[in-house]
Structure formats: structure tokens, C-alpha cells
Image 1: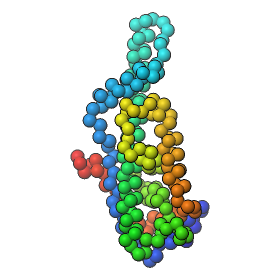
Image 2: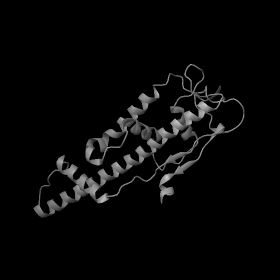
Image 3: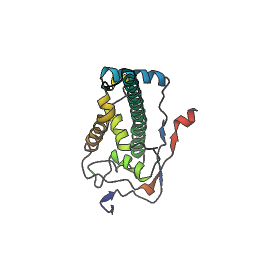
Image 4: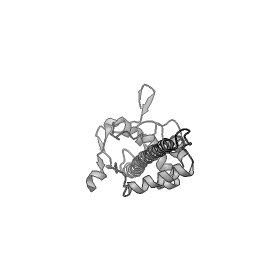
Length: 210
């Protein structure tokens, strides 16, 4: 077992670099009707009464209120699209981990690394750490949050089902709690996978489709 700083790494037998399945990710969420999404966001603003009335000149006040409503609706849509991007990444990572587990199980030099009764051992979260160690470009997506959102939602709920409180404030805590709970399901201590011993491709399915 190698120890670097406070990190433990599992010992992979042999010296060869292992090929893992490709990570297939959709980086551009499918949004067919952005105008419809804006209308729904505007409805949320109205229902939650998020914009207080403005004192003063009535015409100028109404224009200011409408401008604020539009800004809030745009912000809601932007927050939701960001969540969609995170969820798609999380969905891709969860499926990739499943494929990696199958790969480990088929290779004699790897199959014991994920067994918790063997020490040191890796866990499913070690694959997320491996992605980070490999400096996979995520275009600003936080992998832990992405996986947490996917763990919380089998499918991302439509914007109509999301409260403004969830979009603005609660999504980070929901995702983080889900990820931490998932992380803690594997008995400690969890060791990392040495990044130099593994390679894989990241395939942008959005580019493949277009």
C-alpha cells in the first residue's frame, strides 16, 4: 500500500496499465422548448410571490416589477439547466462505475480490490476520486454534487416540480447529503485507485449525436 500525504492507494498487482470502459457523458442537456421553460419559471415567480410591489410612480413601478420577474425567471432557468448538467454527469458516472465494477470482477489482478474484507480496499467512491485524479474536464460540474443528484433522483424532475427554494438554496445540501451517505456505505478506510495504473476515454455523447 502506498501512502501519499493523508491518501492511501491500493496495491495493484503487476506493472501494466489497465484499460477501463469509456465514460459516456451527455454534456448538453436536451431542452427542446426553452421558451416553455421560461413560461414555467415565470409561473413559479408569480405563485411564490417572489417580487414585492414597488412604491412610487405606478407605470415605472410596474415596469420595474416586470423586469425583476424576468430576471428571476432567467435565473431560475439558469439554475435548473446547471442542475440538469450535473445530473447528466452523475448519471454517466454511476453507469461508468457499474461498468468498471464488472471489469474489475473479470480480471484476476483487480477483482479483490473492491472487497471490503480485504485491506487496503477501494470502494465505489474511489472511481469518483479517480476521475478527479485524472483531471477529467467537467466544464465546471462538481463530480460529488453530480453523483449526489443522480443518487437522489433516478430522473431529474422537470422544472415545474422544483420549488424556487430548491433551485436557489437546497440543491447543494441535498446532493452533498446523498453523496456522503453513499460514501459512508463502504466500510472505512477506503483507499484510492492509483491513477497511473488506469486509463479510459471520456466520450462526449452530445458531440457524437450532433
